[in-house]
Amino acid sequence: MKIEKNLMLVLGMLALLSQGCKKHESNNKDTAPASFFPSGEIVNMTGSFDGSFRGTTHILVTNMALTLVQNGVNLSGTFLLAPSNTGTISGAINQDTMKLTLTQTNPCAGTYQVVAPADEFSIIGTLVGSDCAFTENGTFNVARKS
Image (cartoon, rainbow, N blue to C red; front, side, top):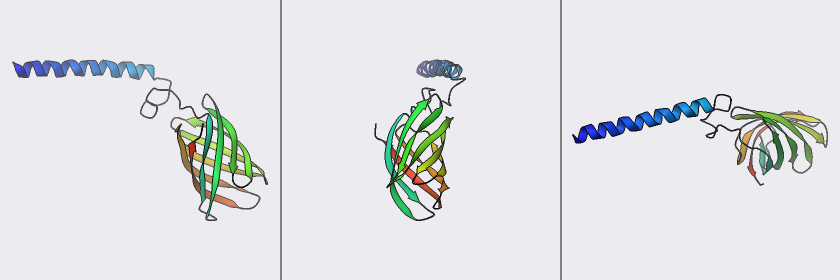
C-alpha cells in the first residue's frame, strides 16, 4: 500500500513537471536558448565595464574600459585601451555569444575583432586586430561597473 502511494506521488510529480516543460518550450520559440538565458530573454549588456587586456603578440598588460549600449541584439559604444587608444564599438549578440568590432580612432586608425560569451556581469574574451603600429592578439577580462 505504501509503495503504491509513493508510486502515485512520483507519477503525479512527473506529470506536473512534463506540463511545465511543454509550457516553457512553447514560450521560448523565438527567443534565446533557455539553457543560457533562463528567462528566455536576451542579456542586457548596456553599461560600463572595466578591467584589463593581456596582449600575447607584444606581451603587454593594460587597463581596458568599455561602455556599451544595447538595442535589441545590436550593441554600440566606446572603448579605451590605456593609456590613449580609443574608439567606437559595434556588434551584436547571437544566441549566447557577442561579436564586436572595435574601430580605433586615436592615436591612429585600427580595427579589432572581439568574441566573448554574452554575460551581463563580466566580459571575458579574445581580441584580434591591428592599427598603424602593430598587429595584436590577446585576451581581456572586464567587469560591470554600472
